Amino acid sequence: MDILFLEFFQNTGFYLCDYRNIIMIIVGMIFIYLGIAKDYEPLLLVPIGFGMLMGNIPIFKGLGLGIYENNSVLHYLYFGVTQGIYPPLVFLGIGAMTDFSTLLARPVLMLLGAAAQAGIFITFLGALALGFLPKESAAIGIIGGADGPTAIFLTAKLAPHLIGPIAVAAYSYMALVPVIQPPIMKLLTSRKERLIRMEEPRQVSKREKMIFPVVAFLLCCFLAPAALPLLGMLCFGNVLKEAVVTERLAVTARTALIDIATILLGLTVGASTQGDVFLTRNSVKIFVLGALSFCIATACGLLFAKFMNLFLKKKINPLLGAAGVSAVPDSARVVHVVGQREDPSNFLLMHAMAPNVSGVIGSAIAAGVLWSLMI
Image (cartoon, rainbow, N blue to C red):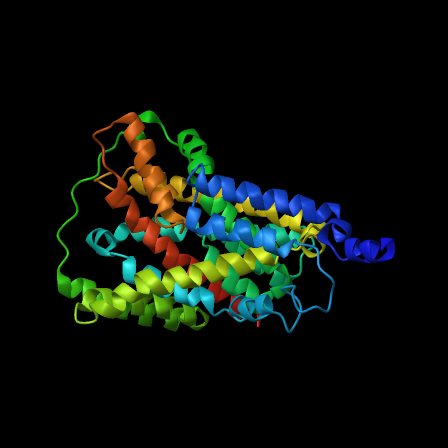
């Protein structure tokens, strides 16, 4: 009886567990707490957090349970991450939700989204300096765009062994936008600048909104063909939305489809963070680089907005530059909140969406450029 009990105990997670599993389970619980109690990107952090719990249950190798075992259910679900299937589906849903009216009404704001992508290339150089290989550095750099699906897609193509830390870093900083960005915004802008009011945007016609995704897709993908899977789905989703006659497809894309893709993406990315695979020195470096890249991207957007004001007759509120990162729509909301703290009657959300959605396009183009350079 004692031998049977001992054999049973040796097969339990309590016996097989090591400190790395415990650390990752605690991190997973923190993610779930932040998502539920603090409302920090709950649609992302809750699936990722619970995935971390699933991925760090100690198991015998060969039973077909772990995400890295070829015959396991989790491994088959993870196939959508490693092969870059889920991110384009998420982009399809984002496209079906996005209104490009504010961007079309004042195209100059698109430059703010482009400026914020400087964080990607600065981080790429920083990763190279820390000893990462060029393909790894390109994947790490994309964290600066604050775009989780794009980071996962590029990492799956260039450095699949780094999907776990890069995905968790990207989504963590996306969720912490309300914490990270406001101090940088206040540091780099004066109160007078934060009080600048934006003029009402012009009315954008239905024809313009219908033509834009087609033209944007053609121009961007001719410029960076490797961005085709992401930008193609983004623009296609927007065509479905604006065409009206395909409203049924648009509704599916922005509800059921994106929800399913987000659940599978978050859960499997979380489950990929097994302690023995995830907790490495390189993971720590990636998290540090990710934080720096996000701060640099925010600062670049703010500073470029101030630079633009040197030449514009109608000044723009430089806070809009912080929305150039592609954390949609959280960074735009943060811009609005920070602006209203100075003047409760100043509404910046609608204007901030212009650089915010251009940041999504910019990060996808940057990913395409890096991918093409690394082939």
